[in-house]
Image 1 (cartoon, rainbow, N blue to C red):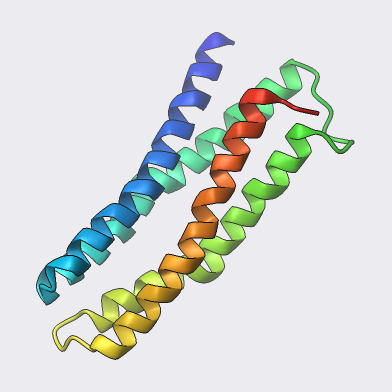
Image 2 (image 1 turned 60 degrees about the horizontal axis):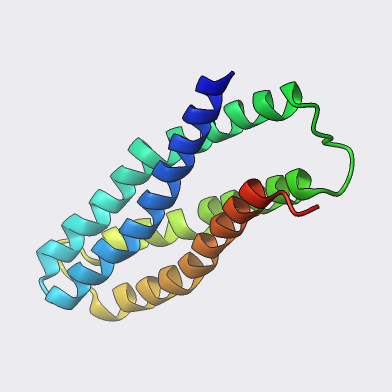
Length: 149
């Protein structure tokens, strides 16, 4: 079962690393003020979500449920595990409902005819919502490591 724990930890590293570095690369591209670079970066962020974020989420859920079940943690009471699952689900809802659609808009608005006003509006929304969607998994990581209640 130790290999499942290693896979679980590795998946958490990949997930957090990808969501944090996505913001870095997006901001770096925007500071370049190069329309083509911004467009390519927004496309690459979307691709990285499909290559890294989705598989790491699936791996975290599968290994997490197996580990929790094998260690007899309760899913039927309010504890660090159920709060973590609720927060993880909230992050997923935010990502699917807001961040992915905003990324699609940023790709569209940064295309051949760069629509700066529309792009900036979508980008600012992505930044603000993205901060929340990044802090929540960090809180989940804290709960998973410390198991405070």
